[in-house]
Length: 321
Image (cartoon, rainbow, N blue to C red; front, top):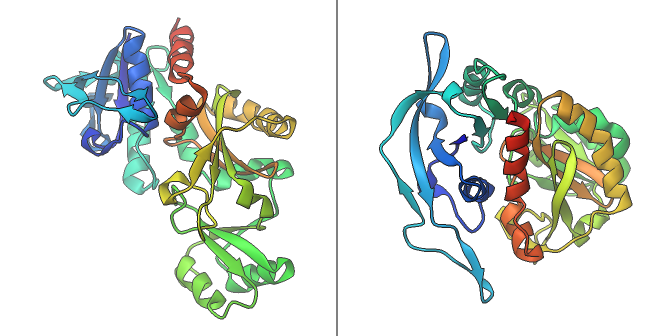
């Protein structure tokens, strides 16, 4: 089979962290061809989604004596080719957020691919519909108290009644721009003004969950089923657990409460073609649903001596079969 990965430039990927690399290694290990491209290399010609693709060979990273072993030249690219994406069996859309207008244009190009010929993960229309903050509001019964607003008075009222809150930009990633809001902070009004761009852009505000000190759990779902999880724990004075801002990772269990959340979201994820997803859970509450380029595989594999990229690829094989 031929697997295409739409990724950010491979030169900027970290093979010891990036899930895209783990998935590409798994596809190669299963004997498949691996091709890569970037969003700006997609075109429409004669009504078909076309891409400038490069075959890639990977030198898999290995965990040896407490650290990752990476060869200096961990990938080898072969000459690029302009191909119809329907020549691929599977296309992974793995470009990192933010979901900008050009990003949405790419999903509309991918929407031209015949699903009977090529599996696209995640489905283009699912990506168009699923803002990673707002989509979670389909499941308010398993979420903390949450509002979305650009009205300063609404946000202040929410924070005042709860004495604190967590503000999240709707288009952020990796913890970027998340703020802890505390009633009585003399900077509160300014923080709200800056985050909402002076009332022109809505933001999400959630009740602060004290359990966040114990970790922000990332659970990886494949077709709605749990395949792995990792806990991300804040360090130092940082209240965010995201790995990108220094959160340390630790093994974790998927509890009965976690599975209740997974069971709640699974049917809609499948309905919307969101097959490879990372949900974030704090203290038994769903806080986000990550669908663009969910990460965590490398950390889960390292902590559990697993290779959860393999069942993802095997599932793709079965889906196409």
